[in-house]
Structure formats: C-alpha cells, structure tokens
Image (cartoon, rainbow, N blue to C red; front, side, top):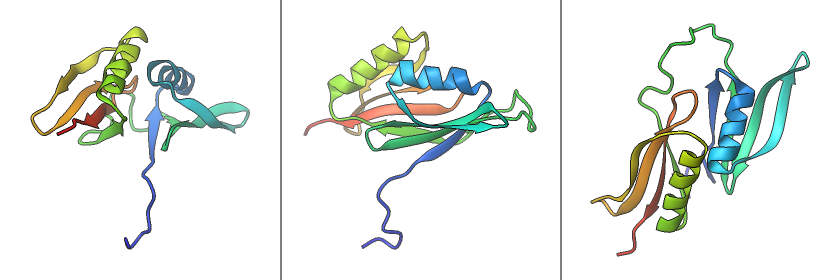
Length: 132
C-alpha cells in the first residue's frame, strides 16, 4: 500500500483570461465544467473534468507579470485508451484553432503521443501505450 493511498493527480493552472481558457478546454479537448468560482461577482476560476482528470483553472491576477513563462519544466500528460483517441484529440485541438508542438506519432518507447500548449503556454501531451 502506498504511503498516501493516492487515487489520482489533479493540477491547478493560472489563466490570463479565465473565460477564454474554459472555452478552449471545452472545445479543444472536450472537458466539461464541474464547478465555477466567483470573487466579488466576477468569474475567478473553474474545475474542469473529463474521465478521472480534474484541472482547476484560476484567473491570474498579473502580479508576477503577463509575459512570464508559465509552467517552465512542467509537462502534463493526458492518458487516453487507444491510438485512435490520440489522433482524434489532435484533430480536435487543430479544429479549435490551436497548433500542435508535434504531430501524433508512434514513439520508440512504445507510446503513440503528441504535445501541444494551451492558451496560457502550459505544455500538455496526449498519449497511449502501444500494444506489444
């Protein structure tokens, strides 16, 4: 048994424009909003979900500067069930008007995957193991 008894990992990301980021995650990846948060009557954040994945999106206040590199050294991987799911996710992201860092491909380490950045520059990937 693990020391934490953990079941999954979520993350929290800061966004320049929370409403635009919510729309992007809905359109480009198919996430749905599970909960919205307001501060003084203004949208301040949301919890978006798909399957066992939960991401908290928060409105950035800009205090650290708008042009800073976000998530430097951080990479979030979304695992899907099949290679066809990888390809479908890439097509959906492109259809939403976003570019991929690299196209879906079978990698030498036994996975089909691609990488992309969200509206705020966070690096994500979609991956599935290849059958042996």
